[in-house]
Length: 243
Image (cartoon, rainbow, N blue to C red):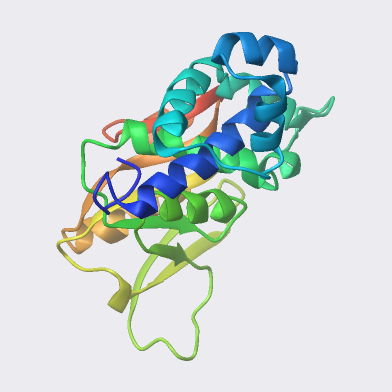
């Protein structure tokens, strides 16, 4: 589920060990070493060395600790701790998109929710969601494609799509046509979902190619306005906010 490589491969075993350390770092903010030691049945000194990356557990122990630790994760709480909302209701997400450790953990949730389909490409608009999309692509072991707001000289062919914003501007996205195949299964990944206009535009671009889109995954969905534009799409999010 985390990768297109065989589940028993050396790649996946090492990836799980590294993700175990990431989860331990997130969970440690809510529990002390003694509490974690009792829960995991491991000495605090050993857990501390895992935490600092000084040693790695064996394959069997990593599997056991991983399965136990994920039960302590509260991704919604973790997101809330990493964002700020001012008095005017504007959201500052810089602490979220810059926390690579957390983004790797969130990418596991993407793998779990979309594990039923064999995703072949991750697509992200060229915004703050690119760091998250990059890590999701790494965890799923598939290429990342960026929908950009400008053309590049070296690209011969584009998929192009536009939409009109509420304030009367036209936003246009361009994707290198050679990066998308008709047989691809696309997952759109971003940080925040607001109106849904950007994603509707990108979805229409792929629909013209008759390319399958598995769904849209974001960290935060704000309000319900996006539901009108994306009423027939599979939308997944970790946190829902009303601001």
